[in-house]
Length: 260
Image (cartoon, rainbow, N blue to C red; front, side, top):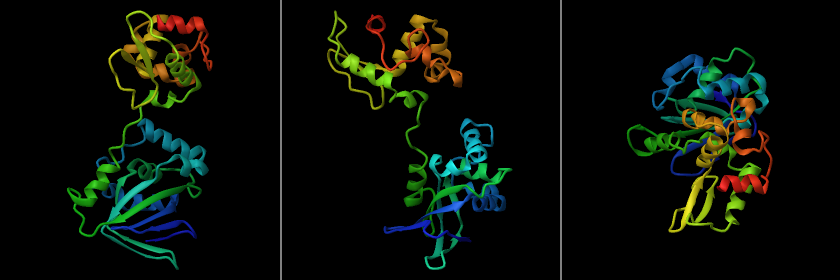
């Protein structure tokens, strides 16, 4: 049972009974403490605990900047057998609630030891009568909420000024020798290969450049560190900088050496 805040809900027209709304962190915590892991029976993952990198990040946001949680968290997707909602009284009653995406958010809020009344959490609730998780709309929602393309560490560097500059520099460079034209792939989906056209992915350029200028082991054992800043334990400044300093462009000498 919930009483939603004024203006904090949205009813959607469609083939399924759906309601999108915002709940305070205390309400999510209350649900978790009452029902625990039975909330995640239809989820492909249960709460993984506090040790994972994602869950550490969730806990840090809850603790340090709770007012920013709504903007930084994807929220919760849930299924249920049915729900009743009165928009006048804003009272919501949900039957057989199941969290199909957001188990880590719910678990982190459930185990929070500090004040969480400032937190706001987005909830997408869909009612599917006599839902069977193995097939139909329920299965489609579970799959869609858990099979998004995973972000990799290099993806977060794709729009850096130096990466955009490298892309433009290769684009404006004429083919030399037998190698042919090089196109720089700084983000997915990468350009398609064709006759006389070579696609150089950002990950590969990072490995090549760091190995040439420093040593080969890190590029093999921990390639993600090539795309993490020094303050986060990485060597991005060395990989794509000059003399260990990251700039928005390289000198012609540095680019020509990289091309070589």
